[in-house]
Length: 541
Image (cartoon, rainbow, N blue to C red; front, side, top):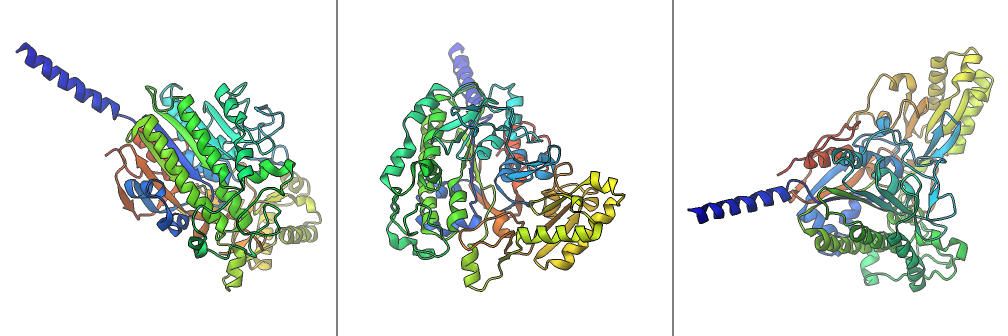
């Protein structure tokens, strides 16, 4: 009888242990692929390996109709929206750079002049999340565990590392294009960990650049894209051509680390660092759930220069597929398959290469930023007898000078309306125009009811905001491409959840970028970020 009771107790302990292990994942990994459009997942799908994008899409929950719900769609706002579960209306990151009304100057979204660069002698580390007004899912995890969870964020771009880490991250590391090293900020630490110094000492960028760049696969498979020698591409490496193979021998020493960011090997550098983070910080090996945020920036940097149909960008995606496979293998070995929860998405999409669109008689163009600015300045000078009515013009927003308007005895509402009416009458390229007195009476929503409102912040944004017709840019580009609109080419992005307690299924319902953070919160059974307007897409199964 006694032995029978011992066996029963033993079985109960095993069951309890199993349930305890599954209460939460050991590690959450957020992967953001900068400027990855939804179509990039499927355009090259037949060439992807079985263990990279395909593994995530086919073994995870693949949301095929995920969209951004605001504009301006760009890197800073995108990363902030993913991790806060809200839009710039609440989190305040209204652009990569935006006008600071208090100090009357343009600032970078992660600029913090009170900080000191850690790991370099230059100013590239004077950064922090000080401009982020809302909490992130990573912050909420730290709060839930009384800061016992580790949160580490890495990227080539500073904003791609800093904003996902939130306010409470243990560390954020980003690439310094002056030294080729990963650096950080005094916001996080006084000095780099020894393992980061050791990683930097290996000088991976020099090794990769010395080897040149050849196509991963046979050149015939790349013919799905425009010709290798294309008029829509810039000569990035000063070779007198845009076609493969690429040598980096003509890059001057002062520019080599900056040029390195325009190669797929910069993504490999991030993967190598991610593996070192997992090993040296023992992520996923603690009693509390840890979080690793990874942002791959090369796809954005390259598309800006070469457009969406270059052999270079295609090769970068094929290599990124293998790099993600490499990362998954490390996670399987170090954390354990089924013990980690991962999501993959993008911070925004991008317009089809404008030069290609124009050549093929698609509607595309540019309004001309200087043209609009000069025209508005001439108008206010005629109408209100001074250019001082306007304090700043940036990001398709007009900031009025309240101080001048008050001193001049003008009516603020009247000034708004007259400028709005002038824009409508003067520029056929403009789609919608919103003025402050209309926007102030509304609140951002989860859906795309008003994308300008969702991307507008009451305290930081301008008094008049407008967007453009589909296919139109601030300035037309002969080479490369860009983003920032509320149209599908900029808003439709991949969204995949994979791993711990995630069912294998494809979901075609409309979902939004602000739904990622509450979904993770719901799975972890913690609070969603404090300004979250998204909803959980599924719960624990």
